[in-house]
Length: 421
Length: 159
Image (cartoon, rainbow over all chains, first blue to last red; front, side):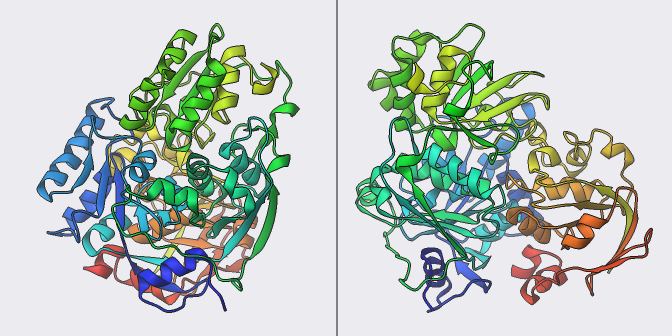
């Protein structure tokens, strides 16, 4: 029986010729990731168990992105603990303020993950790197500690759902709309424990930022990972960037899938997820012009903080003003993206429109800092979760959308179809 | 190993943001995390929960973030076991890794009500609702995972 892309990467890293869905395996890791929230717990586990060395100081990344620049004394103390650990064990990819970016924007950009690699990260959006043809999945801090010690992790080999993408997206449809549409269709547990494998001729219309956004939200359908085949778009992005050796895996012709969905990209419309689950989707044309009045717009995050996202927002905001009583906060994903956006003149557009631009941070996405909502407030956000209380007060609301929809909404003060502006 | 306690019942898609809101993730202290367990879904939970109590929820329990703080907060709050129709996969992994007993059993998850007294036999996977007398059979863990549990968690199994 054939194997899926995900199964092939797992088999190769487990040293097995063949694996099948449901099989429990132990596999070698190419990258182990943690952040300033999850690394302290992993370090505690590491130290409580008297571990004295890491398996490979070049294959561990510790990215201080969630509550940084340190939002309070406790956050500062956590980062200090990680910094001291990183210095002690000479962790090469410890990234603090000044080098850090939002982890899932940073690792691909810095070439720390690439085609065929096996990565675990103590952050649920670690599934982002599947965009590059990697098997990458979120785990907890104890898994991170075990990975740092042994260079291995256990996996239950997942079955897969195939998403065949056909057609060319029209108008303002972006990767975010593709993944929101899919989650709306299959639900927040529609891919529970499974791989989401994307394929089809429609991939040629999705740039690397679109793919990173789509893979990023695989977890919002409960998936173990999301993965794309490697093509010229991937190669162009990874060549000269990926520090490892790229290995391209393709699914076997006779690979088994639990289900197959054909998604016609040409039929999709900009899509918004209503509170309080990413599956509560509506297309923008179904939303009344003054149906949802908003107080805040967040553009950024590991989902939509990349250069294409900022360009899409700038295209809408050019020569416009942010609506009265709306705060529009923009978070470029990394220092490099920040510089690029600045050089392209995007910041002039944002600032003149009345938006603010932050240093890279996860910030308000998880209700950390830099844009917390009060009771009764509503935000349109390009982030990935709209759970109760996610961005602040439990009586606030988050509407998930693409950068284009978020920017258009910032201009009108209501959730708005960018085509209507 | 067994557990017996009063049930705290929750519905579908209980996410890690309501189990332990991110505003409390600036600490890894189990005691501090426990003090805010379930705060955004049931403010009174921390005042009601007693050592040994059992949490029952429906599908996709623990969805969202990978924060291990979520099962840590539940365990440190005194909960002895979580029964659900299904668990989100990272929460499932984390619970095994930190030694919070969890059981998947759709029928029990749907039947059992808030305040019922429930007992669980972890060796057999039999769940008994002492209030109604009804018993349920949970999915047993694969042997590989049973070994991790027997060794006292993931780290002990690799060191």
